[in-house]
Length: 405
Image 1: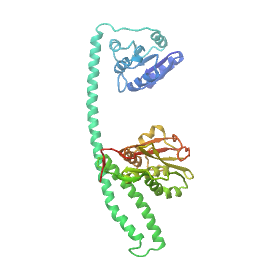
Image 2: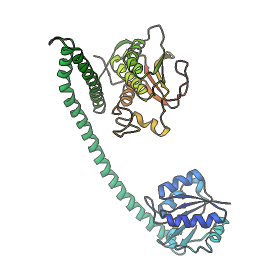
Image 3: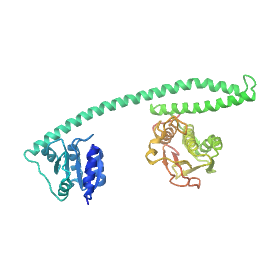
């Protein structure tokens, strides 16, 4: 039979229409608001639209006017089914019929069949005047919404500015006391302040490990703060992409061993000369490898491949055998502070800044970052089941933010 789109926010009314039209053999699809209804109409191409006048976001008049502006839906009958509004106004804006609530359940299916068969109603009297009045009300309502959105946007800009300032201040406040802590720890471990017992050395080693982790978080906070405030400086000098990649792998090798994760590497033997900022690139690579380590279960695999992409780019690919990332999260996990599981009880550490930093750095170096889950192809001749992160950089980027130092 027919496919009917019912736009109605009252669940009781939706159930009634579903029951009556379903019994008549029609397929009924439902939307609770005007914006959702318009999108469903575009996607589903219904044979008839039932719309309530008093619905959230856009009202029934606005929905009707919008649907009449979509070429593929111009011939689809639209019937207002509502306790509010008047018949002539609904017909003037483009509806083909008007059914008052409460509906007559005994004859409702037959009435819908008439509209599906070509029956149409027409506005009586000054329909042009009614349409102008309704359009004026819509414009006034939209003007009010624009004012509200402008005020909201200003508040959001103020919040973003305060966040940037807070991030910058807290990063520096954390970094300042870290310097003497790291320095005195090194003096103690080197026994420059006196000999250590085995127990003391073990305790200081644990403190140093935790301090290094905290320092890494602080450094990343400082980096992201600099990125968001536009104060990140990129140094331009010659470097070996292969050597930077190998160093990044070496920095996480012990973490992988601790988790009993097998590392599979494929790195060219020859140097890969490039121009850019190798220090920031190294941190970007390390963040990606850290993520792979965190999300790969014990006994899993991480594959890394370094290669040249034509004559212009180099790529650093990292794939893992972890649980992967759902499609709706892939784009957002490169946003600062976003985490799929942001609770304090989550299984994995971190503050959600690593991939955001890696994306900004690779873009500044003339490349970018791509994520696929499951991996789009093999990495180091291994087809793993988790996530693939590919960093790309230009061999000689020409970007305005690249500053020679």
